[in-house]
Amino acid sequence: MKKADPIGESNKQVDHLFREVSGKVVAVLTQKFGVHHIELIMDAVQDAFEAGLIRWRYEGLPRVPEAWLMTVAHRKLLNQLRKESHRPDMMAEVETKMDEAAIEIDGSYIKDSQLRLLLACVNLPLSRRDRIITTLHILCGFSPAELARAMGLHFEAVRKSLYRNKLKLAQDTTWIQKEADVNFAVNQIPTLLEILYALFNEGYKSQQGDKSVDISLCYEALRLLKLVNELVSDTEIQALLALFYFHLSRFPARMDAEGDWLTLEEQDRNLWDEHLKGAGFHHLALAKPTDTPTTWYLEAVIASLHAAAPSFDLTPWKMIEQLYTKWHEAEAENPMVRLQALTAAIFHRADLQLVNELEALRSTIEDSQKYMIDATIAGLYEKLGYTEKRNQFLSQAIDQCYQNADMRWLKKKMKQ
Image (cartoon, rainbow, N blue to C red; front, side):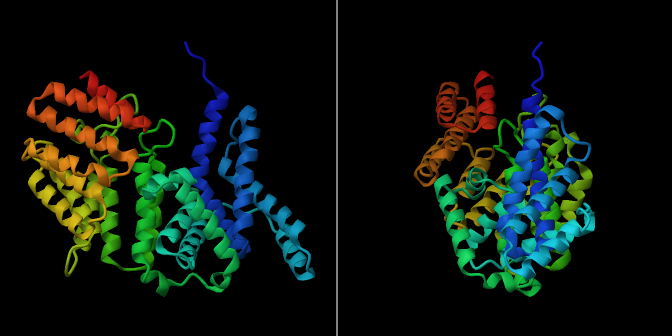
Protein backbone atom coordinates (compact mmCIF):
# COMPACT_ATOMS: atom_id res chain seq x y z
CA MET A 1 0.00 0.00 0.00
CA LYS A 2 1.38 3.39 -1.04
CA LYS A 3 2.14 5.64 1.93
CA ALA A 4 0.56 9.05 2.09
CA ASP A 5 2.86 11.98 1.40
CA PRO A 6 2.09 14.55 4.14
CA ILE A 7 4.38 17.15 2.57
CA GLY A 8 2.77 16.77 -0.84
CA GLU A 9 -0.72 16.90 0.67
CA SER A 10 0.19 20.01 2.67
CA ASN A 11 1.51 21.70 -0.48
CA LYS A 12 -1.73 20.94 -2.32
CA GLN A 13 -3.83 22.31 0.56
CA VAL A 14 -1.77 25.52 0.71
CA ASP A 15 -2.06 25.91 -3.07
CA HIS A 16 -5.83 25.56 -2.75
CA LEU A 17 -5.92 28.08 0.11
CA PHE A 18 -3.89 30.56 -1.91
CA ARG A 19 -6.37 30.39 -4.78
CA GLU A 20 -9.37 30.52 -2.45
CA VAL A 21 -8.42 33.24 0.04
CA SER A 22 -5.52 35.30 -1.36
CA GLY A 23 -7.90 37.72 -3.07
CA LYS A 24 -9.89 38.11 0.14
CA VAL A 25 -6.77 38.87 2.18
CA VAL A 26 -5.53 41.36 -0.44
CA ALA A 27 -8.96 43.03 -0.52
CA VAL A 28 -9.22 43.36 3.27
CA LEU A 29 -5.70 44.76 3.63
CA THR A 30 -6.29 47.15 0.74
CA GLN A 31 -9.45 48.45 2.39
CA LYS A 32 -7.57 48.96 5.66
CA PHE A 33 -4.31 50.42 4.35
CA GLY A 34 -5.32 51.95 1.02
CA VAL A 35 -4.88 50.99 -2.60
CA HIS A 36 -1.66 53.03 -2.79
CA HIS A 37 -0.01 50.19 -0.85
CA ILE A 38 -1.28 47.47 -3.20
CA GLU A 39 2.20 46.28 -4.25
CA LEU A 40 3.39 45.91 -0.65
CA ILE A 41 0.11 44.22 0.25
CA MET A 42 0.49 41.59 -2.50
CA ASP A 43 4.09 40.95 -1.42
CA ALA A 44 2.97 40.52 2.20
CA VAL A 45 0.25 38.05 1.23
CA GLN A 46 2.70 36.05 -0.91
CA ASP A 47 5.23 36.03 1.96
CA ALA A 48 2.52 34.83 4.36
CA PHE A 49 1.64 31.89 2.14
CA GLU A 50 5.30 30.96 1.72
CA ALA A 51 5.74 31.09 5.49
CA GLY A 52 2.64 28.91 5.86
CA LEU A 53 3.99 26.36 3.40
CA ILE A 54 7.23 26.04 5.39
CA ARG A 55 5.53 25.90 8.80
CA TRP A 56 2.65 23.60 7.87
CA ARG A 57 4.84 21.17 6.00
CA TYR A 58 5.65 19.44 9.27
CA GLU A 59 3.15 20.89 11.77
CA GLY A 60 0.04 20.44 9.61
CA LEU A 61 -2.60 23.08 8.87
CA PRO A 62 -3.90 25.21 11.76
CA ARG A 63 -7.55 24.90 12.76
CA VAL A 64 -8.46 28.12 10.93
CA PRO A 65 -5.74 28.62 8.28
CA GLU A 66 -7.52 31.63 6.76
CA ALA A 67 -7.27 33.52 10.05
CA TRP A 68 -3.60 32.59 10.39
CA LEU A 69 -2.85 33.83 6.87
CA MET A 70 -4.74 37.08 7.43
CA THR A 71 -2.88 37.74 10.70
CA VAL A 72 0.57 36.91 9.33
CA ALA A 73 0.07 38.95 6.12
CA HIS A 74 -1.20 41.84 8.27
CA ARG A 75 1.89 41.68 10.49
CA LYS A 76 4.32 41.39 7.56
CA LEU A 77 2.74 44.39 5.87
CA LEU A 78 3.00 46.49 9.00
CA ASN A 79 6.66 45.55 9.43
CA GLN A 80 7.41 46.48 5.83
CA LEU A 81 5.56 49.79 6.12
CA ARG A 82 7.52 50.58 9.26
CA LYS A 83 10.80 49.94 7.45
CA GLU A 84 9.79 52.20 4.56
CA SER A 85 8.18 54.97 6.64
CA HIS A 86 10.54 57.93 6.97
CA ARG A 87 8.15 60.87 7.31
CA PRO A 88 6.73 61.47 10.83
CA ASP A 89 3.14 61.45 9.54
CA MET A 90 3.63 58.07 7.85
CA MET A 91 5.27 56.66 10.97
CA ALA A 92 2.32 57.82 13.05
CA GLU A 93 -0.08 56.10 10.64
CA VAL A 94 1.84 52.84 10.85
CA GLU A 95 2.03 52.97 14.66
CA THR A 96 -1.74 53.49 14.77
CA LYS A 97 -2.28 50.46 12.56
CA MET A 98 0.17 48.44 14.65
CA ASP A 99 -1.81 49.19 17.81
CA GLU A 100 -5.06 47.96 16.25
CA ALA A 101 -6.25 44.46 16.94
CA ALA A 102 -5.68 41.75 14.34
CA ILE A 103 -8.13 41.82 11.48
CA GLU A 104 -11.23 39.74 12.13
CA ILE A 105 -12.49 37.66 9.22
CA ASP A 106 -15.97 39.10 9.08
CA GLY A 107 -18.10 38.07 6.10
CA SER A 108 -19.67 41.46 5.45
CA TYR A 109 -16.32 43.26 5.76
CA ILE A 110 -14.66 40.87 3.30
CA LYS A 111 -17.61 41.22 0.93
CA ASP A 112 -17.38 45.01 1.00
CA SER A 113 -13.59 44.91 0.64
CA GLN A 114 -13.67 42.67 -2.41
CA LEU A 115 -16.34 44.74 -4.12
CA ARG A 116 -14.34 47.91 -3.53
CA LEU A 117 -11.17 46.33 -4.88
CA LEU A 118 -13.00 44.95 -7.93
CA LEU A 119 -14.34 48.42 -8.77
CA ALA A 120 -10.93 49.98 -8.12
CA CYS A 121 -9.36 47.55 -10.59
CA VAL A 122 -11.94 48.47 -13.24
CA ASN A 123 -10.82 52.09 -12.76
CA LEU A 124 -7.21 51.25 -13.65
CA PRO A 125 -5.81 53.43 -16.51
CA LEU A 126 -5.07 50.38 -18.66
CA SER A 127 -6.49 48.82 -21.79
CA ARG A 128 -9.49 46.56 -21.33
CA ARG A 129 -7.39 43.42 -21.75
CA ASP A 130 -4.74 44.64 -19.29
CA ARG A 131 -7.41 45.58 -16.73
CA ILE A 132 -8.74 42.03 -16.92
CA ILE A 133 -5.26 40.52 -16.57
CA THR A 134 -4.34 42.78 -13.65
CA THR A 135 -7.65 42.29 -11.83
CA LEU A 136 -7.45 38.50 -12.03
CA HIS A 137 -3.88 38.71 -10.74
CA ILE A 138 -4.70 41.02 -7.82
CA LEU A 139 -8.20 39.99 -6.80
CA CYS A 140 -8.12 36.27 -7.61
CA GLY A 141 -4.46 35.34 -7.21
CA PHE A 142 -4.01 34.13 -10.81
CA SER A 143 -0.41 33.30 -11.74
CA PRO A 144 0.92 34.27 -15.19
CA ALA A 145 0.46 30.66 -16.38
CA GLU A 146 -3.16 30.59 -15.21
CA LEU A 147 -3.79 33.99 -16.78
CA ALA A 148 -2.39 32.75 -20.09
CA ARG A 149 -4.81 29.80 -20.08
CA ALA A 150 -7.80 31.85 -18.96
CA MET A 151 -7.19 34.60 -21.52
CA GLY A 152 -6.04 32.37 -24.39
CA LEU A 153 -2.68 34.17 -24.51
CA HIS A 154 0.96 33.11 -24.53
CA PHE A 155 2.66 32.91 -21.13
CA GLU A 156 5.40 35.37 -22.12
CA ALA A 157 2.83 37.92 -23.35
CA VAL A 158 1.06 37.78 -19.98
CA ARG A 159 4.28 38.02 -18.00
CA LYS A 160 5.38 41.10 -19.96
CA SER A 161 1.90 42.61 -19.66
CA LEU A 162 1.94 42.30 -15.85
CA TYR A 163 5.39 43.89 -15.73
CA ARG A 164 4.36 46.80 -17.99
CA ASN A 165 1.12 47.30 -16.06
CA LYS A 166 3.03 47.48 -12.78
CA LEU A 167 5.34 50.18 -14.16
CA LYS A 168 2.47 52.17 -15.66
CA LEU A 169 0.44 52.13 -12.45
CA ALA A 170 3.49 53.24 -10.48
CA GLN A 171 4.03 56.17 -12.86
CA ASP A 172 0.39 57.21 -13.25
CA THR A 173 -0.93 57.48 -9.70
CA THR A 174 -4.11 59.42 -10.51
CA TRP A 175 -6.16 56.23 -10.25
CA ILE A 176 -5.21 55.93 -6.56
CA GLN A 177 -7.22 59.04 -5.67
CA LYS A 178 -10.37 57.68 -7.33
CA GLU A 179 -12.97 56.08 -5.12
CA ALA A 180 -14.70 52.90 -6.21
CA ASP A 181 -16.93 54.61 -8.76
CA VAL A 182 -20.27 52.86 -9.22
CA ASN A 183 -21.23 55.06 -12.17
CA PHE A 184 -17.98 54.22 -13.91
CA ALA A 185 -18.55 50.53 -13.19
CA VAL A 186 -21.90 50.66 -14.98
CA ASN A 187 -20.03 51.62 -18.15
CA GLN A 188 -17.51 48.83 -17.59
CA ILE A 189 -19.95 45.92 -17.27
CA PRO A 190 -18.38 44.02 -20.23
CA THR A 191 -14.96 44.19 -18.57
CA LEU A 192 -16.35 43.08 -15.20
CA LEU A 193 -18.12 40.15 -16.84
CA GLU A 194 -15.04 39.06 -18.79
CA ILE A 195 -13.05 39.03 -15.55
CA LEU A 196 -15.58 36.83 -13.76
CA TYR A 197 -16.15 34.65 -16.84
CA ALA A 198 -12.40 33.96 -17.03
CA LEU A 199 -12.34 33.11 -13.31
CA PHE A 200 -15.28 30.72 -13.68
CA ASN A 201 -13.80 29.02 -16.74
CA GLU A 202 -10.46 28.43 -15.02
CA GLY A 203 -12.35 26.47 -12.38
CA TYR A 204 -14.84 24.82 -14.76
CA LYS A 205 -12.05 23.13 -16.69
CA SER A 206 -9.07 23.53 -14.44
CA GLN A 207 -5.62 22.76 -15.76
CA GLN A 208 -4.04 23.26 -12.34
CA GLY A 209 -2.06 20.11 -11.63
CA ASP A 210 -4.04 16.94 -12.21
CA LYS A 211 -7.46 18.35 -11.33
CA SER A 212 -10.26 18.29 -13.89
CA VAL A 213 -12.24 21.03 -12.15
CA ASP A 214 -11.77 23.49 -9.30
CA ILE A 215 -15.31 24.14 -8.12
CA SER A 216 -14.16 26.67 -5.49
CA LEU A 217 -13.11 29.04 -8.30
CA CYS A 218 -16.51 28.67 -9.96
CA TYR A 219 -18.38 29.51 -6.77
CA GLU A 220 -16.02 32.43 -6.14
CA ALA A 221 -16.87 33.81 -9.60
CA LEU A 222 -20.58 33.34 -8.88
CA ARG A 223 -20.28 35.06 -5.50
CA LEU A 224 -18.50 38.08 -6.97
CA LEU A 225 -21.00 38.28 -9.82
CA LYS A 226 -23.87 38.31 -7.32
CA LEU A 227 -22.15 41.24 -5.56
CA VAL A 228 -22.03 43.13 -8.84
CA ASN A 229 -25.68 42.24 -9.47
CA GLU A 230 -26.61 43.84 -6.14
CA LEU A 231 -24.85 47.00 -7.28
CA VAL A 232 -25.95 47.30 -10.91
CA SER A 233 -29.12 46.22 -12.73
CA ASP A 234 -28.17 44.85 -16.14
CA THR A 235 -29.46 42.09 -18.43
CA GLU A 236 -25.87 41.06 -19.26
CA ILE A 237 -25.26 40.28 -15.60
CA GLN A 238 -28.45 38.21 -15.53
CA ALA A 239 -27.30 36.27 -18.60
CA LEU A 240 -23.96 35.41 -17.03
CA LEU A 241 -25.64 34.44 -13.75
CA ALA A 242 -27.89 32.09 -15.73
CA LEU A 243 -24.88 30.59 -17.49
CA PHE A 244 -23.02 30.02 -14.22
CA TYR A 245 -26.02 28.36 -12.59
CA PHE A 246 -26.63 26.05 -15.57
CA HIS A 247 -23.00 24.94 -15.58
CA LEU A 248 -22.90 24.47 -11.80
CA SER A 249 -26.06 22.36 -11.93
CA ARG A 250 -24.12 19.70 -13.86
CA PHE A 251 -21.17 19.51 -11.49
CA PRO A 252 -22.51 16.53 -9.48
CA ALA A 253 -22.36 14.44 -12.69
CA ARG A 254 -19.27 15.96 -14.31
CA MET A 255 -16.61 13.63 -12.92
CA ASP A 256 -16.16 9.88 -12.76
CA ALA A 257 -14.94 7.86 -9.77
CA GLU A 258 -11.31 8.68 -10.63
CA GLY A 259 -12.00 12.42 -10.70
CA ASP A 260 -11.82 12.80 -14.48
CA TRP A 261 -14.41 14.84 -16.36
CA LEU A 262 -17.27 13.24 -18.24
CA THR A 263 -18.83 14.51 -21.46
CA LEU A 264 -22.50 15.48 -21.65
CA GLU A 265 -23.20 12.16 -23.33
CA GLU A 266 -21.59 10.24 -20.47
CA GLN A 267 -23.21 12.15 -17.60
CA ASP A 268 -26.03 10.79 -15.45
CA ARG A 269 -28.68 13.51 -15.79
CA ASN A 270 -30.44 12.30 -12.66
CA LEU A 271 -27.55 13.81 -10.73
CA TRP A 272 -28.03 17.29 -12.18
CA ASP A 273 -29.06 19.79 -9.50
CA GLU A 274 -32.65 20.88 -10.11
CA HIS A 275 -32.41 23.83 -7.73
CA LEU A 276 -29.43 25.30 -9.59
CA LYS A 277 -31.13 24.63 -12.94
CA GLY A 278 -34.17 26.51 -11.67
CA ALA A 279 -31.97 29.46 -10.68
CA GLY A 280 -30.50 29.40 -14.17
CA PHE A 281 -33.92 29.61 -15.84
CA HIS A 282 -34.96 32.38 -13.42
CA HIS A 283 -32.00 34.59 -14.37
CA LEU A 284 -32.32 33.68 -18.06
CA ALA A 285 -35.88 35.08 -18.06
CA LEU A 286 -34.53 38.33 -16.57
CA ALA A 287 -31.74 38.43 -19.16
CA LYS A 288 -33.91 38.57 -22.28
CA PRO A 289 -32.57 41.48 -24.37
CA THR A 290 -34.79 44.09 -25.92
CA ASP A 291 -32.82 44.16 -29.19
CA THR A 292 -30.03 42.03 -30.70
CA PRO A 293 -29.03 39.10 -28.43
CA THR A 294 -25.56 39.43 -26.94
CA THR A 295 -22.99 36.65 -26.86
CA TRP A 296 -23.52 36.21 -23.10
CA TYR A 297 -27.22 35.69 -23.68
CA LEU A 298 -26.64 33.28 -26.59
CA GLU A 299 -24.29 31.17 -24.49
CA ALA A 300 -26.79 31.11 -21.63
CA VAL A 301 -29.57 30.00 -24.00
CA ILE A 302 -27.34 27.20 -25.32
CA ALA A 303 -26.69 26.05 -21.74
CA SER A 304 -30.43 26.16 -21.04
CA LEU A 305 -31.15 23.86 -24.00
CA HIS A 306 -28.72 21.32 -22.60
CA ALA A 307 -30.28 21.70 -19.14
CA ALA A 308 -33.82 21.19 -20.46
CA ALA A 309 -33.04 18.21 -22.74
CA PRO A 310 -34.36 14.92 -21.28
CA SER A 311 -31.45 12.99 -22.80
CA PHE A 312 -28.33 13.52 -24.89
CA ASP A 313 -30.00 12.16 -28.06
CA LEU A 314 -33.03 14.43 -27.61
CA THR A 315 -30.90 17.57 -27.29
CA PRO A 316 -31.90 20.12 -30.00
CA TRP A 317 -28.52 19.99 -31.74
CA LYS A 318 -29.61 21.85 -34.87
CA MET A 319 -30.81 24.79 -32.80
CA ILE A 320 -27.59 24.72 -30.76
CA GLU A 321 -25.49 24.81 -33.95
CA GLN A 322 -27.53 27.78 -35.19
CA LEU A 323 -27.00 29.64 -31.90
CA TYR A 324 -23.25 29.01 -31.98
CA THR A 325 -23.19 30.19 -35.61
CA LYS A 326 -25.02 33.38 -34.61
CA TRP A 327 -22.54 33.86 -31.76
CA HIS A 328 -19.61 33.38 -34.17
CA GLU A 329 -21.06 36.00 -36.51
CA ALA A 330 -20.84 38.49 -33.65
CA GLU A 331 -17.40 37.27 -32.53
CA ALA A 332 -15.71 36.13 -35.73
CA GLU A 333 -12.23 36.40 -34.25
CA ASN A 334 -13.00 33.52 -31.85
CA PRO A 335 -12.44 30.22 -33.71
CA MET A 336 -13.37 28.19 -30.63
CA VAL A 337 -17.00 29.28 -31.05
CA ARG A 338 -16.94 27.98 -34.63
CA LEU A 339 -15.48 24.71 -33.32
CA GLN A 340 -18.39 24.43 -30.87
CA ALA A 341 -20.86 24.97 -33.73
CA LEU A 342 -19.26 22.19 -35.78
CA THR A 343 -19.17 19.90 -32.74
CA ALA A 344 -22.92 20.36 -32.36
CA ALA A 345 -23.36 19.71 -36.10
CA ILE A 346 -21.89 16.22 -35.70
CA PHE A 347 -24.97 15.13 -33.76
CA HIS A 348 -27.58 16.16 -36.33
CA ARG A 349 -25.84 16.27 -39.75
CA ALA A 350 -22.79 14.02 -39.51
CA ASP A 351 -21.08 13.76 -42.90
CA LEU A 352 -17.54 13.84 -44.27
CA GLN A 353 -17.92 17.47 -45.38
CA LEU A 354 -17.59 18.41 -41.72
CA VAL A 355 -14.00 17.15 -41.79
CA ASN A 356 -13.10 19.87 -44.32
CA GLU A 357 -14.86 22.51 -42.21
CA LEU A 358 -12.99 21.38 -39.10
CA GLU A 359 -9.63 21.26 -40.89
CA ALA A 360 -10.19 24.82 -42.11
CA LEU A 361 -10.10 25.93 -38.47
CA ARG A 362 -6.73 24.38 -37.71
CA SER A 363 -4.62 27.34 -38.84
CA THR A 364 -6.71 29.80 -36.79
CA ILE A 365 -6.34 28.03 -33.44
CA GLU A 366 -3.46 28.29 -30.96
CA ASP A 367 -1.00 25.40 -31.11
CA SER A 368 -1.90 24.40 -27.55
CA GLN A 369 -5.54 23.89 -28.63
CA LYS A 370 -5.04 22.14 -31.98
CA TYR A 371 -5.58 18.76 -30.34
CA MET A 372 -9.25 19.75 -29.98
CA ILE A 373 -9.61 19.74 -33.77
CA ASP A 374 -8.27 16.18 -33.98
CA ALA A 375 -10.42 15.04 -31.03
CA THR A 376 -13.54 16.50 -32.69
CA ILE A 377 -12.73 14.87 -36.05
CA ALA A 378 -12.21 11.58 -34.18
CA GLY A 379 -15.70 12.00 -32.71
CA LEU A 380 -17.13 12.56 -36.19
CA TYR A 381 -15.48 9.42 -37.57
CA GLU A 382 -16.77 7.48 -34.56
CA LYS A 383 -20.29 8.72 -35.33
CA LEU A 384 -19.90 7.62 -38.97
CA GLY A 385 -18.47 4.23 -38.00
CA TYR A 386 -14.92 4.71 -39.34
CA THR A 387 -13.00 3.07 -36.47
CA GLU A 388 -9.56 3.19 -38.07
CA LYS A 389 -9.88 6.90 -38.90
CA ARG A 390 -11.25 7.57 -35.44
CA ASN A 391 -8.19 5.95 -33.83
CA GLN A 392 -5.84 7.82 -36.16
CA PHE A 393 -7.17 11.22 -35.11
CA LEU A 394 -7.41 10.25 -31.44
CA SER A 395 -3.74 9.30 -31.60
CA GLN A 396 -2.91 12.66 -33.19
CA ALA A 397 -4.88 14.45 -30.49
CA ILE A 398 -3.01 12.58 -27.75
CA ASP A 399 0.35 13.47 -29.32
CA GLN A 400 -0.53 17.19 -29.34
CA CYS A 401 -2.28 17.38 -25.94
CA TYR A 402 -0.40 18.75 -22.94
CA GLN A 403 -3.40 19.15 -20.61
CA ASN A 404 -3.39 16.36 -18.04
CA ALA A 405 -7.15 15.97 -17.65
CA ASP A 406 -7.80 15.99 -21.40
CA MET A 407 -4.92 13.59 -22.01
CA ARG A 408 -6.41 11.05 -19.59
CA TRP A 409 -9.84 11.36 -21.24
CA LEU A 410 -8.39 10.89 -24.75
CA LYS A 411 -6.47 7.82 -23.68
CA LYS A 412 -9.62 6.33 -22.15
CA LYS A 413 -11.44 6.94 -25.45
CA MET A 414 -8.63 5.19 -27.33
CA LYS A 415 -9.11 2.07 -25.20
CA GLN A 416 -12.88 1.90 -25.81
